[in-house]
Structure formats: structure tokens, C-alpha cells
Image 1: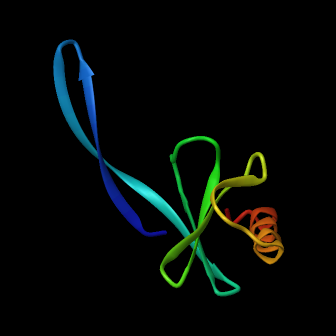
Image 2 (image 1 turned 45 degrees about the vertical axis):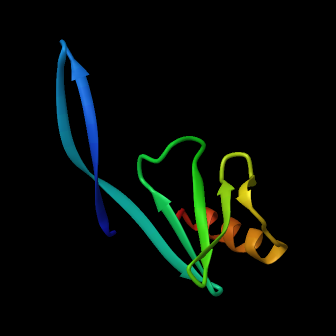
Image 3 (image 1 turned 120 degrees about the horizontal axis):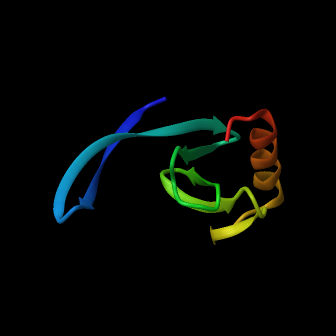
Length: 88
């Protein structure tokens, strides 16, 4: 799983600390789409789906609905398959 780094600013006891920590990303290709998930990303649990380097849909895995973009039946089927396999 590729790693990216993020900075978090922690303010405690009137002191400011900058802490770098790794973000983990899951990446899966299937059916001409790229599916990306991020460990520790904001709620609800979701997947970003790209095709030809463009965001197609941001899909809410918990509520099974579109958060951003558009989706077709084929893509919903792929998302459901990946989720049931435990990949997402």
C-alpha cells in the first residue's frame, strides 16, 4: 500500500506541535476504473473512483449513495463487488 504523509498541528498546553504521520492509501483497478480509499479519511467511509485521471464519483460505502459525481449500474456493481471482497 503506498504511503503519503500529512502534517497535523497539535495544540496542547499553549504549545503548538507539528507532527508528520503516514497516510495509507488503497488503490485497485477494475473495469477501466481506479478505486482509491484512504485509511483514516473522514466519515462516512467512502471510495473515490477515477477514469482517465478524472473523478467519476465519490461513493458513500455506508449509505450506498453518491457524495459527488455520477454513477451507473455497472459502476455500482463493481463497487459492491470490491466492498464484499473486503478490498475497499
